[in-house]
Length: 149
Image (cartoon, rainbow, N blue to C red; front, side, top):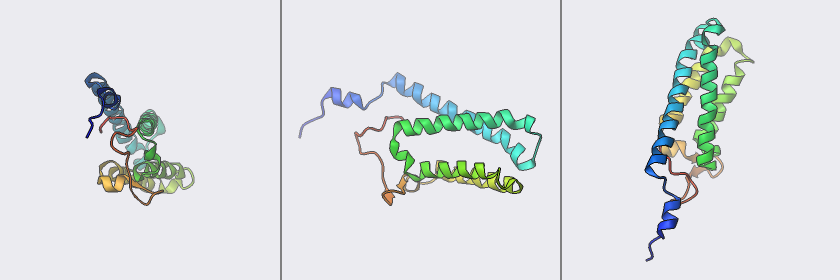
């Protein structure tokens, strides 16, 4: 049995410095997203003056787009796995608020609950491919960028 060459192995490994920079930046973006969602929640649920929470909502949306871009960059499979598909469902639900504004609090709370299942559900749920109808992930040593989280 032959061992992979050090160069081939190094292609799939991040340097420790780069790993920490990427990991901390991902965590910082997630923290900003949670902050934006948490503060803008009051505006949505209690129909507060938009001036009080709009900038926080924009922070939540911008950071959410950045998190999506990171996931898609790491693995195109994200787009067909439940974690990606349900993220687009969340965006559609949020957009539906303009069609049924009287349901704004209920829709927003549903999106928050769905977010918990996407972020903290078992890997078998999050990695389920709607295309393949089974759990699917990048093969070991595949193209997936090695950034945990």
